[in-house]
Length: 451
Image (tube, rainbow, N blue to C red; front, top):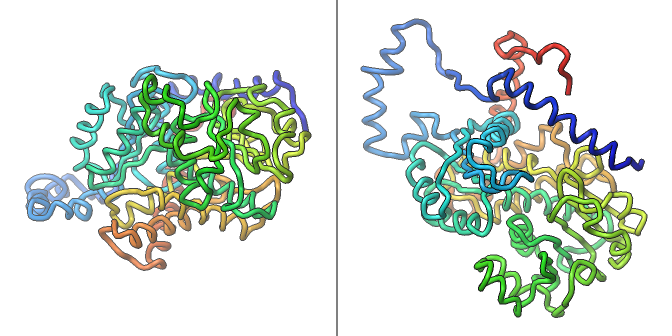
């Protein structure tokens, strides 16, 4: 069913009207709660001094014991400098805090991960890397969030080399994971093999550069991908990428994509391709309806800009696109990062992994796709929904098993042990929230406020 721009904008505006009321009502979205039994004041002789000195001595002898004697095994940091927050741009760390709190909330509810928002004034890559090293002893994993490019690439790359815990950038790896899952199932429905398809990627920022990396790992041939930025299709002669943008990560794809040597912009990149992945700027009208007609038969288009996709889904459908996904929950096939990061962190934490690799992203994507396929996929339903919580333990296990396979896991539980652990932790997080709400410890919404 078609809806007007005015109707969509009105719907998109509703959360913005309610959000300030509720954020102020609750004073934020997170709090710290004890997890140990406290029967009386004398128990603090164990939890604090003098008893606490003994676990300190144990950890002094073996720093990895901190994963057993403290909650470090389940702590993750959500770190941002506020330089590229959602569609708001460089709004600064303080203004980015509500987003990081929201991210931590999703970590807990969907993955059972105790995540802490850390908004910082470390703006240079060297400062951020130093900060990550400083906080490493407190955490089992780190999620980088809303950091502008190209520095986000360098921070992720260097941190993955230098830290002994997983470091992940959700705008890159999280987006790539869920996009790949959608591509896998969409290709199954149209009867095409991933190694045979041609793909246009509109937008060459942090998201699509990592999408291209992960698609290549999954079997897409680099020369059959065509990346487009605001100046046109990437190619080896685009020296401006190195000389002006100073972005070697983007130039890597300029050098190895586009084997045909295509020139031009979005329509030239879309000509004859099987898949379009757009992660550019809000529409509509960024991608014109007639351009979809240039694509191959039984084509696939993921239009991921928010709050309005690069084109309306029905425009793509009317032009012959077979399967369309967007970033919105009110259209079919939502490409939602929340399907990825909570479970992937659950998996790497449960094996105390030293890093999180792109291969783990592929493993998580394959499991997401498999879950949806087992319960049934259609052209309008290619991915799990956030409400299908059973997908999260399965995805966590897939990521954990890949960690073990790649030799970066400190622990090596069985698949069954991992499944039981992930299921118990995730269900426990959901039940804890329900109990707090039911008891009134978390109060209800103010009267008259409805989402």
